Amino acid sequence: MEVSKLTSKYQTTIPQEIRQFLGLGKGDMVRFDIENDKVVLNKEIPLDLSEPTETEYMQLMAQTMTEWQSDEDDDLLPPWQPHKTA
Image 1 (cartoon, one colour):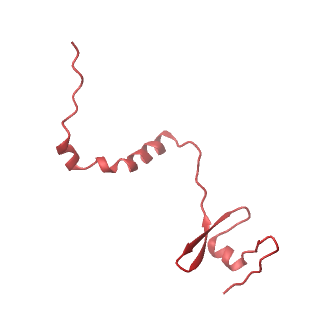
Image 2 (cartoon, helix red, strand yellow):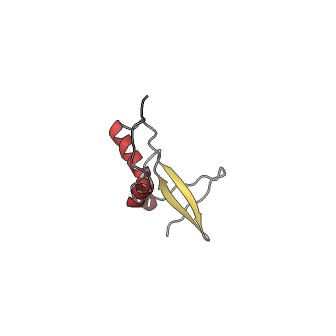
Image 3 (cartoon, one colour):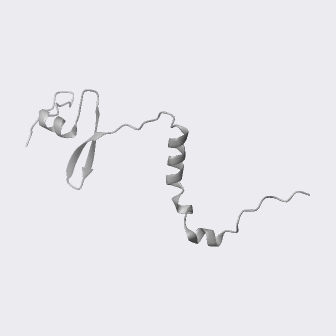
């Protein structure tokens, strides 16, 4: 068990053993979660907000559209047909 003291600004040092276990480095973010009657500390993995490549975008889209990839859907929807022109 590790113990750390709060400063007057409510800051603390995360003990070395805990930092190593979580893989924390300088500048990393941590997340505090309350689970039942315990506080859980985790390393926060920041979101990558950079623009995805076209391949990454298509992979992300495919993951979100799995609900439309079932045989039941094919049975309910008529086959696509192009618009007729006059």
